[in-house]
Length: 296
Image 1 (cartoon, rainbow, N blue to C red):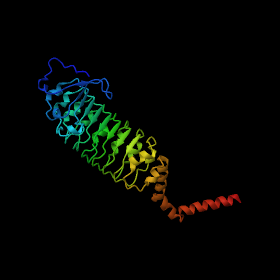
Image 2 (cartoon, rainbow, N blue to C red):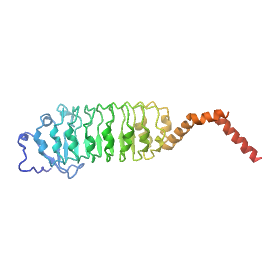
Image 3 (cartoon, rainbow, N blue to C red):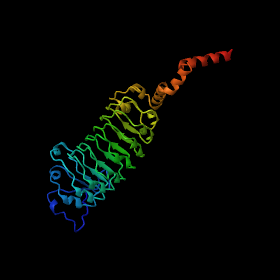
Image 4 (tube, helix red, strand yellow):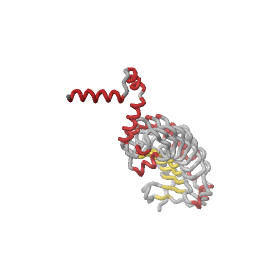
């Protein structure tokens, strides 16, 4: 256990009742300066905490059940002073909004906001370009926050258990995204552009209202198609195109099914056959007859 160096003129007078210990040996964040605040300390948070500009990790999540009676209802705008923060954990509070000043934390790499009551992100959120991991499960988002699509380095995004009704085509702008968790939402369709996100290794869409997958969904060959993961990915949807049993066979089976399905539904091709008085089966029969004649 170590203590954070505080500059001589830093105003820290109103924190005398806080047990402020700064960890530098946390196995998850080895070598970073960390401050964890919870319980009564969280319910009466002194603003002087935000004078600790050297902080790199700030954890203000209740975490343990005994602490759940003490939660943050708002994040002070002074959070913007902590310009060296790399990790900010605000899980399991009662936040309904975030201050715009959070967008000043341009060194953030991980932001945890799950289990709150958020429905939107502050304007300017896209300025967090170093963000690699964003956790926003179990909130009240109905619309996908468009500014997230402009965060180029984001690799992990969890928006499961919200009220999301659609996904924007711009979601494919996140070229580095390898994990996208969207289960337990209200999604009915998936944008075609998601099929270009070949960096995805984990895509969970279970327990939505999806009836069919995009035409090129089978091209996401880097997804883990193990059967046990397919259940998390797609189970709980009223899928008909393709059926879940096809999905379990992997990307090639999905691609074959959707390609075949598109051919049967192609009106231009079907109309061409009808104008010539030829069905697909008839065309195949004629080919067989020609082949037979050639054999003779």
